Length: 161
Image 1 (cartoon, rainbow, N blue to C red):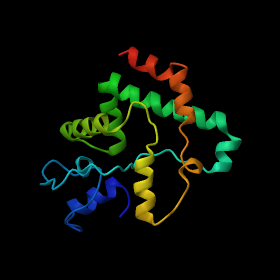
Image 2 (spheres, rainbow, N blue to C red; image 1 turned 90 degrees about the vertical axis):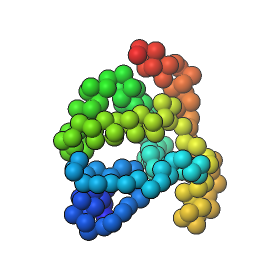
Image 3 (cartoon, rainbow, N blue to C red; image 1 turned 60 degrees about the vertical axis):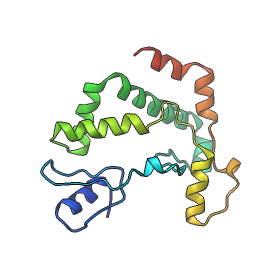
Image 4 (tube, helix red, strand yellow; image 1 turned 90 degrees about the horizontal axis):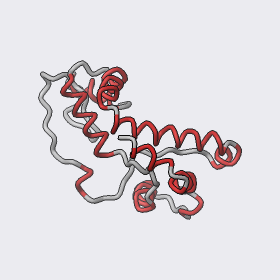
C-alpha cells in the first residue's frame, strides 16, 4: 500500500477497511476505531531502526556518527520544542487538523527512545518473523550510541529542557 499517508488515503476512500499501521492519517470527519495497540502486547519489535550496509559503515564512520547524532538531536528537539515539532509534523505529514498533529506528536514522544539503542530482542523478533538466522553481534552495533553517552552528548541535550 505504501506508507502511512497512502494507507490513510486508502482507508478514507474505503479501498481498505482496516490496517496495521503506526497511525491512520485521515481527515477529522472519518470515523476510526482503534482495535489494538500493538505496542501494549509486550512483543519486542522495532519499526524505527537506522540501518547501514557493513561496507558503508566501515568506510564512512564519521557520516554514520553524524546521522546518529542528528537523529538523537531530532528526538530531543521533539521534547524541547513542541510548537516547532507540531509545525514540522503538520507540514510533512500533510495534516491540517491540529488535533491529529497533536496525536501524532504524542505518539512520537511515547514511542521514540531518547537513547536509541538497538534492542537485541526486537531484532530477534523481526528476524524470526522473516525466517532468518543471524549472529546478532554481526548485525547489531550500539557502539556509536554508547560512545555518545560516554562523552555526555545525550545528557547535555536533555539537561537543556
